[in-house]
Amino acid sequence: MTDNNVVIRFNGVSFAYNDAKVILNEANFSVHRNSIVTIIGQNGAGKSTIFKLLLGKLTPQSGKISVELGTTIGIAEQVIPADKLDLSVADYFKTPLPEIKRMFKSLKLDILLTKRVKELSGGQKAKLMLAYALISNPDVLLLDEPTNNLDSAGVELLTNLLMNYQKTCIVISHDADFLNCFTDGVLNLDIHTKKVEQFVGNYYDVVGEIAAKLERDRLVNSRLQKSIKDRFEKINKLGGKSIAMSQLARRIRQDIEGDREEMLEMRQEDKTIPEFTIPCQEYAGYIIKINKPIKTEMVKGHRLLIKGPNGIGKSTLLKAFLAGQEADINPAIRVGYYSQDFSELDFTVTAYASLLTVSQTDHPEVIYETGARFLLTAELLHTKIESLSEGQKGLLCYARLFLQKPGLLVLDEPTNHINFRHIPVIANAINNFEGPIILVSHLTDFVDKIKNLRELDLTT
Image (cartoon, rainbow, N blue to C red; front, top):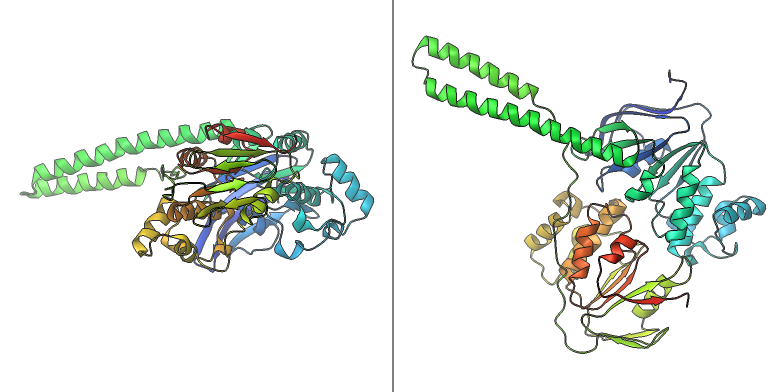
């Protein structure tokens, strides 16, 4: 690499899964030493793929990825690999205990080193992955959706860490306010062109710059389209009855081709899922009777928000409700469950098969139409769930709820991995659900959109 301040460079990098599903097409960008860069793009655009290419887990079909000689890279992934869930916390690190304890103290992570990783809460796992990435003091830190499952105190701690971070960091996140606190530059992955656009500036400035450029390009193309239309009308009026008229028509056609060549390749805006409703199962009478930690009966219209810091047992309580240990759910009720780790999904089947298992109809056109509504193309529907991005898995869960027509919603961090553009739509759908809702979420703006929530604070 010629620029002494560049630590990472992608030069004409192209990558496709199975040589068919194109993710990157001649991508070019560079990351400077000690900068903090954010990667943005629609769910499935390839943000996590860039991390895998950097780590050598994937190999590009063409182009060159250059990393400065001797550079070490650490990553906090979105999820802990399945083969590490049965390890103890100490074995997960394979690092001297004093170093682990020092890192835990700095991240305010209070867990036993003998505890199994699978026994940790979602927030504790998020901090564990961050500690794992930081403990080796890497030259480049990769963070893939690091705020997922973190409570407000955890997000504040991570924000302060990054605002004072002295090394290179690349972050993937859908939390706009979080990103704007520390971002020096943005890499935008366009899911349509498969290109990477590079911008300098904080998050909100760059998003504004992208929107302004999009509007300028639209105006240019609108002018050229009008010019093309006017020239076609002129050709039609000429009729081409004489040699002179034919020559003039030929020149006008050449002008039209010139206008077409001048038209700008438009960056298409990331798609947002359309407004939708989650149909409610028709049922009269009690739906769920909660016995602990409070005694209450929930019917249509009742809503419960379970609050508390990471590790206090919110997800454990939800699972106890579902297992009938702390609650009695009417056996006639269909339960719509969104788990923070997608444990309700069978990763070995296709998205289509997953939708079919909960759908109240087996008509293929209904499955395909529902998939399209949640940005799941026919190709994605026939892809195994294990190969979908985390964001696509989240949208699949909402497609399942849409088809299931549940009588009860149990939602555990239902904004995890979801593109921020979709969150207001999802909040509106949940707010309009007619059945009872039991919700766990650390995203304040999202919770505020769900009206008439009764709170259960596990700290009291």
